[in-house]
Amino acid sequence: MASRPPPIEAFGAGKVILLGEHSVVYGHPALAGPLSQGVTARGVPAKRCQLTLPPHLSRHQRAQLTAAFARAAKATGEPAVKVTLDADLPLAVGLGSSAALSVACSRLLLKAAGKEPTAKETARVAWEMEQEFHGTPSGVDHTTSAEERLVLYRRKPGTAVGKGRVVDSPKSLSVVVALAGERSPTKATVGALRERQARWPERYRRLFTEIGRVASEGAEAVASGDLAALGDAMNVNQGLLAALGLSSPPLEEMVYRLRGLGALGAKLTGAGGDGGAVIGLFLEPAPAVAKLTALGVRCFSSQLAGPRAT
Ligand code: MEV
Image (cartoon, rainbow, N blue to C red; front, side):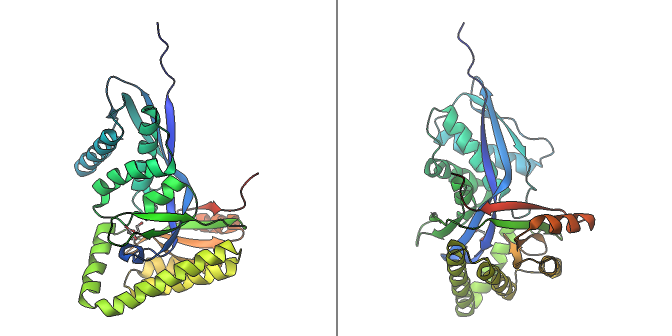
């Protein structure tokens, strides 16, 4: 009797945007890095390609996930595998959970189909899924997750997708991620901003351009190991996001809390709005996580980049 192939596993990292959310939608660069938290997909041989839906999903989420998985299955030749998902990342708070899920499924299906799950191939399949979840995202989330490196991402002019340039960091780059307030759906926040920019295009173009500049400067600061300059870029970016109408009292309060705890820079990350995730850049994240946890704040730390092990 032929022996059954062993189960396969694939991971998709969540992400944080260090600099440049929203303006990235309009073609400007954004600096983003992978979290160590994410989604793990596991696959066992089966008669056909299928996904076991996680429990506690709404009807809408079930339909969306089923449709997204079907697109990835089609893009990988429908390998005969049954997939289950497991997340250690807070979901739907601006930390790229749908991209992490898309990358985990795509990597797993590519592996099951006997194909090499390179970052490029993984991103191509994950993009199919991301469109089902978000409509027309900039592509920064799934690109960062597929690369699993800090990237300066830019959407190609006139196209829906873009390219991430890996940014090496000679210094360890650690952030504290803290959750604040009630999150507004990304689609609504992105849509409301689009209306404002359509009404006053020149003013908003200037702000997007400035955010893009700050993101590029931040990437240079990372490459040269100047974490103080990166922190300052994050603080300036927060001010510009507030000017775009994307911050709120719970997010601002958390930004100031993180700065008060010694962050070199702090800002909202992801879509912003009424609430969501805030990041602070720390040389020593552990004491800040301990203090925030004692105050009842949901938080964790993650190293986004650093000297690579030889
Ligand atoms: C969401 O993680 C980041 C946004 O810039 C939207 C996008 O890039 O598609 C708000």
